[in-house]
Each structure stands twice: as structure tokens, then as C-alpha cells.
Amino acid sequence: KAFLKETGEEKAEVVDKLTLKAKDLEGKEGEVVVLKKI
Image (cartoon, rainbow, N blue to C red):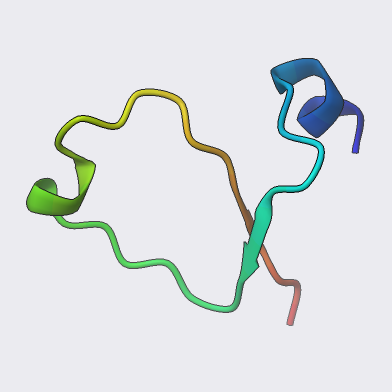
């Protein structure tokens, strides 16, 4: 939570799985995504 507060992303998206593709990253520069612990 401290990291999210420092980055200004107090309500970041929580996801089960994250798949990154080059086309999805175009134009993004500082998005925070939280992965759910399994």
C-alpha cells in the first residue's frame, strides 16, 4: 500500500493474470497493476 500511495495510484487494478504485448504498451508510461496472490 505504501508503494501505491507513493506512486499516486491508491486504487490500482488487481488482476489474476497479466499478459503484456508490445501493442498494448504503446503510449503507456507509468501504469501500476497489482497481481493477486494465489
